Length: 112
Ligand SMILES: [Mg+2]
Image (cartoon, rainbow, N blue to C red; front, top):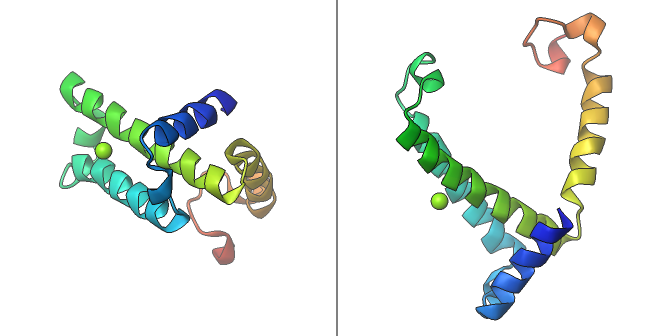
C-alpha cells in the first residue's frame, strides 16, 4: 500500500497535477470511474454478469485499477490509511451483523 501511495504522489508531482487533486476533485473522479465499471454491467442479466468475455474482463481490470488509484489518492489527501479504515470497518460490520443473527439473510441491520 505504501508503495502505491508513493507512486501516485510521484506520478501527480511529476506532472504538476497535485494542484488538481483536491478531495472534491478526487471524489468526483472516483465516482466517474465507479460508473465506468457499472456501465459494463448495465442491462446484463445476473447470469451474463458472471460470464464475462476475456475482453470485457480486461476492460474491467483497467477500471478497477482507476477506482483504486483515485480511492487511494483521496485517502492520502485526507490523511486516512485505507487498509486500516477497511480493517476497522470489517470489525464494526462484524458487530452490526453477528453471524448467528444474519447467516444466509440479506436484510439491513435495522431490519433485524
Ligand atoms: Mg476509467
